[in-house]
Amino acid sequence: MNTSYQLFIDGVWREGSDGTKVPVIDPATEEAFAEVSWGTPEDANLALAAAEKAFAEGGEWSTWSPTRRGRFLFAVAALVRQNIAELSALFSREHGKPPHQASGELEDAARYLEYFGGWADKLTGMTIDLGRGQMDYVLREPLGVTVHIAPWNYPLDIFCRSIAPALAAGNTCVVKPSREISVVTLALARLFQEAGLPAGVLNIIPGSGSVLGKVLTEDPRVRGIIFTGSVATGRTVLQAAARNITPVVSMELGGKAPSLVFVKDATELDGPVGGAVGALAWNAGQSCGQRARWYVRRDLYEPFLERLAPRVRNLKVGPATQPGVDLGPLVSKKHYDNVMNYIRIGIEEGARLIAGGGRPEGLGEKGYFVAPTVFADCHNGMRIVREEIFGPVITVIPVDSLDEAVDLANDNMFGLSSEIWTSDVTTAHSVASRLDVGHVTINGSAAFGFEVPFGGVKLSGLGREGGPEAILAYTRLKNVWVNLSRK
Ligand code: TXE
Image 1 (tube, protein in one colour):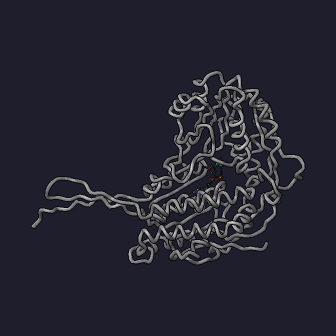
Image 2 (cartoon, helix red, strand yellow):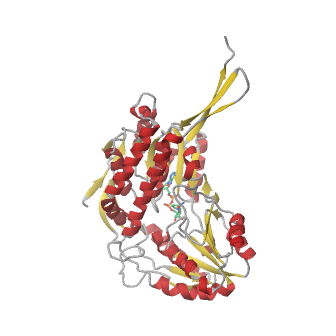
């Protein structure tokens, strides 16, 4: 065990109040390479008190102009880029992501800081004409103390996409990273300190989700909750928020994205096949927007599978330290067991295995590696089609018409992301309007970013992150009426 990471509360690095430390496991070797202090309810209370004090009028943070807050976020983004090699090595070790994906996520984190840094001095209120003798104006104010509960799949991207708008708008933050991935978040927080953030504005406490989550989401000092995670925990967080009617700024709860393949003929299958390969390889499929259900027009169905199978078998699975790895291990033993269980379910449900189906060969018994797996001949009644697997597993389903594909795509509890492959412009836009989701891509999967609103409908959650609407959600409106006729 060579490195020990601590909590970051009120500008100070410290042990948890009861001294508990937990090992940080490398998912490729299953060995501990560091340890991290575990926060207690007492620590959570300290963090909330620090954030409240930092937000209060008269504190240093309240003297920072919006321009200064924006410049600060740009300065942190620059530090992220300066330290990208070191951070991405740590990130790969803790998470298992291959280096190009780890550094790509750090670049995304930097872009969120810049995008919302640019917004800091562009937030405005308004005046409303109520007639002579009176004046009415609307102030746009920060919410106050915001609590950010982050997941493990894109921990840095999701960390920055919510704390950047929160800080840009003048809020203070208490962040609880996921129990699986926390040390890279703490390493990133050092850069905020290095750039000169006042004490208490950003506090980070790793620890048990159920223990800390309860304290953080039920506390009346909290004026905004940002959550990304499972539907079950999302429900618990909403119930906790109900206690003090705390605004839930956004809640992203996963997905089961459909991809509709309606290209002209088999000569146009390169794009969708590449998209399906990416759905398996990128982040080892541990993405809420993963294209997990492929509805392929029947005449394209076998050609699609024939082209897909060899490309999937060619994907290189291994530890992030090996050059040329396309997908690393899954994040934890618990998640590995869960994904392996879904693969068993798929086989029992009678789906046809086209590639993968278990542990990849040649990697021994250590490490949470799963071979990229494609199930064909699936239907919407199967659990592997209905439920979020969140791993390198996709399902393929033949369809006879566009109407059938749209109906089947919408027949799911989630409604986050989706896509359509077609060269017919009318088909593309009419399908986009009929899909019951928050996000559609046409002829490509990767197109969403910092500048656009991202979020879901149905059980995928509420609110949007990214884009101008996101930062507005980190503010509240105060209306002021003035009597101008009073002598
Ligand atoms: O989620 P949890 P897990 C989905 C994905 C995955 C499944 C389970 O399908 O396989 O959820 O993942 C904190 N009050 N997604 O177990 O438990 C927890 O510590 C407040 C999709 O990681 O929901 C962590 O920080 N917080 C998703 C965060 O909630 C609590 C990304 C998420 O953990 C809490 C992640 C409580 N009572 C998982 N209990 C996406 N939208 O992409 C736990 N937490």
